Image (cartoon, rainbow, N blue to C red; front, side):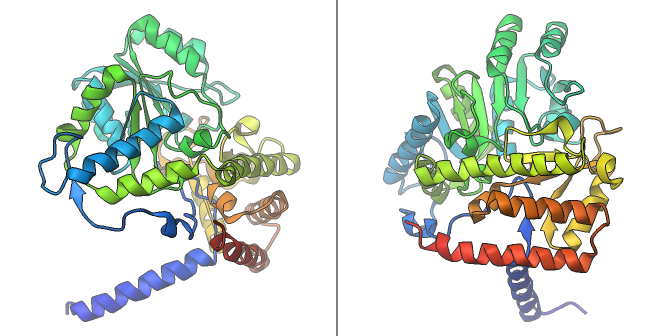
Length: 417
Ligand code: DSN
């Protein structure tokens, strides 16, 4: 018997409420998650529901007189924050922004050089099952034994492969990028340079991660993740590519988008220029480094590459605790700590089901206001669970203690500006 709509509605409400309660009772170390400050709601200039499409000056739907103004202002904020010539804030996600960039710069079958998935690249950087791997001829560079990109090796591969585009950027590469070297390589082989800073956008805006976004030809980034804006993405590019990118977004790869994304994103981008945001961004990196040192002190070799420049670290759970990525993720989930399985560059395959580590992120914890002392407790809980030295009941009680700290912080965060 099919459920009635009334029954489905009540299930939906029960699931939503339980999900919220669950989120309040857990510590979230998923690097792409974050907490949007509650007070932000009051700062939003527009709460309407209109959509629009096209670009400034060409709109196929009526009522657009102020849409151009809103889109211009939002783009100007992004340009002011990152120093680029042009900005588009319409993409529904960074995957879709990447799709638009490929559409603008490549023809199907064109060659691209990118960071390998298991070395930290994203699935839209040429993974076989993704549109990118199906449409374009992706070749890959990896990382050396220290887990770093070897830019001489990239140069060598680029000379051999002669790609039309080099994509750098990642979901799980914890180090800074040598963008100047990449620029030199691209100039030498005649390739465009695209940097995907989906994860790092907020850290860059908050001056916690150095990366000059004026150097690549085009940059993509999530507006949520470390930026703490509405879910969506920005494309930033040089003046020379502005028209190409505009038309790759519309009509190239998408039609409508909500006007609210522009206003919400612009508010989030403006906030990045406050002291409070700089403190959050520095805290995210500081927490990740502190966790990394705490794991390394107790379990030398536990952190792949030995540290981080960002808001996450790569925990080699297989080497340190004899626990593969999926087992580690599940063991932590049982006690209320959320992190995600991660393939490490040393993995035997790129498949997430063979993941031998965990990505441990700190953006959410930084937004929640956790301190270095809290990070030490967290490292003890994670190591205790993964090494099976601590029972689930003890670990869950310790997590509940940290969750209680967050509740107090929540109250304080809500009364900020
Ligand atoms: N690829 C996912 C991540 O990095 O978490 C989301 O973009």
